[in-house]
Amino acid sequence: MPERQYGGLDINDDWETLTKANKEGYRSDPPSGNEDMPDWDTTVKPYLTEAEEENSGQEEQQDHDQENQDKSSQEEQEDTLQEHPLQPVAPCRNAERPRQLPLRYQNIADVSILLQGQNDAKTLDEIELFECNSPPFTESRRKEISGLLEKGVFKFINIADVPKGLRIFNSRFVDEIKNVGTDKAFEKSRLVVQAYNNYGKELVLTQSPTIQRMSQRLILAIAATLQGQSIGLYLRDISQAYVQSNTQLTRDFFARPPQELGLKNGSILQVVKPLYGVPEAGNHWFNTYHHHHTEKLRMNQSTYDPCLLYTNSNGFGIVGLQTDDTLFLADKTFAAAEETELQRAKLLAKEREKLTESTPIKFNGGYINQEGDSIRLSQERQCQNLRLINTKAIDLTSSRGEIRKAPEAAFDLSFAAQVINPNEQDAKALNKRIQWQLDNPLRGLHFVRLDITSLKLIVFTDASFANNQDLSSQIGFVIILIDGNNRANIIHWSSIKCKRITQSVLASELYVMAHGFDTGAAIKATVEKILQLRKPLPLILCTDSKSLYDCLVKLGTTQEKRLMVDLMCLRQSYERREIAEIKWIDGGSNPADAMTKNKPCQALKELIDMNMVNLKVTEWVECVGDDIATRPT
Image (tube, helix red, strand yellow):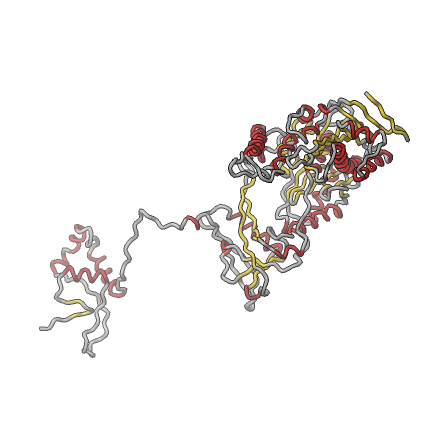
């Protein structure tokens, strides 16, 4: 009798082979050549005798692998197998080694954008962002994208719609945790365009002004002087400042979306309004925010700093603009007007902070603390970021911008920035100053209350002739606001290399006095307008140079005609009462001596530590009526 085969199985195979076939779900095909046989779908099942069927229930309980059900369950299973043949089962994976994403793809927010169009138009109707396993910065990124879409900062286009020849920039998320280590810590994300090597920025204005350091210190000095008059110092932080500009970009700007957005290939962002990373974005925002203060709050701009504004018509207020941060001194009237106009202009901003003894504020890299009747300005965080330089790979210019609140370090940092080919000795000198700053991170400036009726503005000047390595002169000055009790606040200081050629000691001393007078005159005019003083603020020039003092007092001349221009300007200022006095003081009582030499200056140390000035005047000249009187000590 010939052997019959169904689906490649031999009916004479043993029991184990048939059982294996049943598990794997073989399908039997009709024998070849038999056309009358119907097309059956059968499954090979184990053959059971009558005795085995009666005892199948007991055997299923005993056999834990195959016979774990009763007879009725076996029959139901057989019916199910006939209707739905078994499919091959993939082997189980090893549970001890779970599959994970590569490290470069971990901790990335899973963000996607769903686009729905009408009439095949690619318009943005809905945006959905979701997170996977709660990666960091997911909520902050969602908030950033939602804000940009709401303001219409960009729109989605196809890459084919980008004009030929225009560069398409990249973009990315910049994530940061603000207020680290405090209970106010929060995540912040910004969508930034990577506009590197953007040659198109040469056709537009990209630089926007920021508040000068002396303007910031002037606000703090006035705040300390006006304490107790219902005046407070506030900090305002604008959210998403650049994208809230009222003006649009004047040129076409395109960028590729970040990979986290999950857009399909060919989608491009057309930036319509200012966005972070666009070179001219800061200028658009400054124009918007500056006009908001001058038009809505009716404020006046100072004569030397466009970011310092003041008003006396809409209450009393002094405002300093630093991009999206605003430091302002205001009474209740102006503070209420500032809040009202901000809401009316629909500018998104955080809740403003007020300086108290328990609530310090941070502005422009400095910490402002209220300590009784005085205000302290320090730069603790910047000092912590300082590091000693390696003498083998020397970079002397990188540390200069780190410290802006320490007058003692002005000369050393200025001297280090002038070195072209530094050696080991230069590196050791800079490391000595950096180490001092690291050892004194809390050292800063104190601003104390002054008697407003006896205020004076004093400019200390000093020069060192040909003391730099290139034989140029180092010049510097210190400007203070002082009252009749000799209590003083530092407003400004400078230590720079004289860019003009000096061929004598008199020339370097005259150049620095002209430089200090220009800065002092600008501060004098601003203080008089802000405080509305009943009489002009006296401006006093102090120098320890006998030759310069004699040249100004005795109305002499010089051989160098270039010096005569500056000399005549100073004399003319006497005649116009712009300079109240010129004093010849002892070199030991001149705080500006530390601006031109690396040796310690006791006068500057006492000014910083105790806010006191002890002038040792040798001789001075002052205007009395229409005459100029000279008074020796």
